[in-house]
Image (cartoon, rainbow, N blue to C red):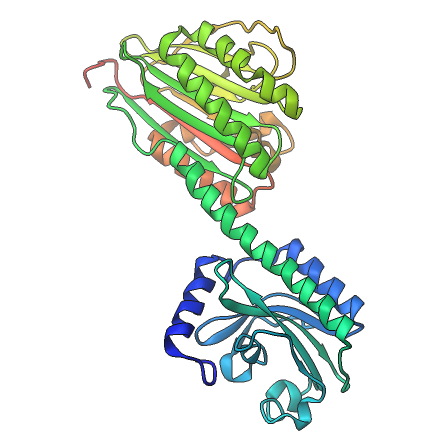
Length: 397
């Protein structure tokens, strides 16, 4: 616990830090850019963004301090910074009783100057410091302190932005299916892995009043918040249109309803929309520029036909509706183009699926394997997979 810190205040401060969900996250260019700029602007050899946890200092970004990550509180200079409202400037660490025995002062790092700007969570709690280090005693002018405070506000904006992204991600996940409909003779599963906190991919399914199953998989051009906002809008119109129209009309009415927002934002959406008739296994579908829907079986795979361009390209597009039939043991798999980043061609992607014997797996296991593959290799684009497997000829199970 920081020296002289009130216990209740310290508990609140640490809770606010944890609520940011930034501790132990990978390095990010938006923070690295700030410390690089700070080092240049203030002509110091070292700069860092340090966050002060209950019993450690964790370094989110550094320039000139390679390998610095976790520091014990007793060795942390920044834990003094979070105890005060203004910039902490120590012109000569060897003459300051708080710092003169610090290992970063007495050891090989040889720090002689320290300046720390408190960083605050959105609720006002001090959670860390944007700090400068030099190996020679020096000070900061009043103007330089103003500049450091301004850069600190820049870091605070990024921290608050992360909290907003986390909340948006929670909301976006609510829009994804959390249960699967009772569908005797079939298995259904899906996952979406955004490359950022939130993304432009989505999938959804719902049972229609006549007992048929409606599924949608879509990919909005772009990433992050703008793509996620458009995805939420397109999802809503697709689901609404499917409730009261056949498969052909549903896609066309959804496209018309979303045309204005797509045209105004310059975005487009690839979409695969399909309707399963459980009794026969027949699937009516429209593939609007998606091109990544396949039926896996013991014999290999068959690709499904394209219906036309993505939504948002042309205002008066007509998409053709196609049909296929799932036989027992076959699985309809729909993915987003994030999976194409892992192989040079689509054919090699499908060959890998064949080699991995994905057609033998239950739908849930297939989805787990596919998303684990993406996580293990890193995915620069959003990754989505949906699997619908027919297990039986008998619609009653």
